[in-house]
Image 1 (tube, rainbow, N blue to C red):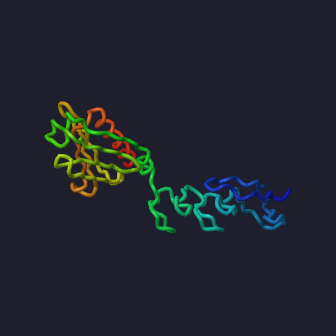
Image 2: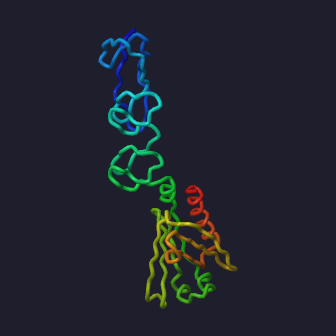
Image 3: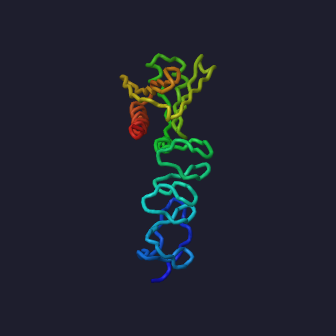
Amino acid sequence: MTPARLTTPPDKGRLQVSMRFRFQANGGWDRRGSWVKGVCEMSDQLCPHCGGELNLDVLYCRHCTRRARDYKLCPTCQEPLSTSASSCPQCTSRVPSEQDRAAQEIHLEFRATRLGACFTGSVTGLLFPPFINVSEGRIRVKKWSLLGLRRHHQEIQVSRVASVRYTKGVFWGGILVETFGGSAEDISEKGLRQTDAREMAEKLKSVLVDRV
């Protein structure tokens, strides 16, 4: 029987199988190529972080103490974390979830129609239609008052959205975004094109469905 051939540490994020023979009941080869009597334990896999040998069905490496199975890397310090972790215990930074990444991929930009703004009772909206944008995981609304003399900005994170509703008028569409922060942070915008409001509501709802 030949000694086990040592392998180089694998890439991060992958668990590789080592080239190792099973030890005989009365002995086996150790990592240095020496015969050791009474060895009947076997290690088939290598730690994806330090390259140390792992016992079967273990979550943590006994050499570097890092998680070696079912993990994801912290985007800040690259420390392996549980797949369900929401923050890193090493650097204390927040770990984006799958829903956060899905929200980052939404890119929408709509402006209310002048006719729609007029029917919703806003004279200023007839001259300066409200503007709503969804990008970088945030919902931003810009609108004007006092015939354009005053400008208002509202911004919330998509991760704070609790529910989204599409509202339909005779000539316009609207969207109501309710947040976990209470009615003070809610966004209610009317005067949009019906197709635009429906598309925005469906995109935001898709993130909420994934979160559930």
